[in-house]
Image 1 (spheres, rainbow, N blue to C red):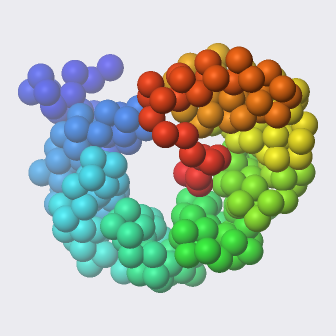
Image 2 (cartoon, helix red, strand yellow):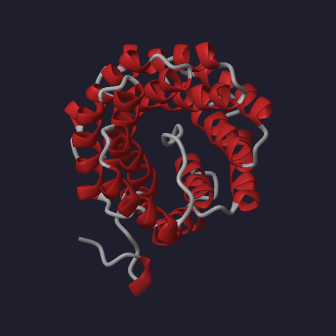
Length: 254
C-alpha cells in the first residue's frame, strides 16, 4: 500500500486513493490525493471531480465551483459535473437552480441514481410530493435495493398520511439494513398514526436501543404510552425529551 502524499511519497494512483478516502468520509485526506494528481496532470477531469466532491462534502462550495468550472471546460455535458453543481445549489437552498442542473445531468446519464434522488428531494422541499415520489421510483427501477430511495419515498407517503404505504417503504429499508434507527422511529410514528400503539412501541424501542437520545423516538414513545393509558411511563419519557430538546415529527428526506 502506498504511503500517500503525506509522507512525501507519490501515490501509485492518487485519484483512486482519493476516491477511496472520500468513500470513508476522510475528505481532507482525499483532497491531498486529488491535488497530487492535478499537480501532475492539471486537466485530469476525474481528479477535478473528486476534488469538487470532497469540497462539497466539507461545505467549501465556492472552491468546489472553481473545480467544476475547470472540469466543465474539458467536458461540458458530463453528468457528474451537472450533478455536483445541482448538489451545491441544493445545499445553498436554490432548489430551482438545482433542478435545472440535475435535469442536465439526467439528459447525459438517464440512469444517474444520485441525480434522480436529489431531484426527488428538491421536489419534496418544494411541496411537489408526487414529483418527488416519481423521482424516487426512477431510482428504484434502476436498483430496487437502494435504501435511501425507499426511505425518502416513505417520508413523502407519511407526510401525505398514506401510512400503510409508508410502512411498506420503511419495511423495505429495514430488510436491507435493520440497524437504521431513524427508520425504526419513522415506522413507529406511522404505526401510532394508525392507532397500532403496541406495535409502534416495539419499533420505537428498537430505535432507542440504536440511539438512546433520539428525541423524536422518545417523544413519540411518550405519546404512544399515553394513548395506552400508561401515563406515569409517558411522563418519564416527556422528562427525558425536555432534558434533550423539543420533539418533532418523523425525520425528513436525506
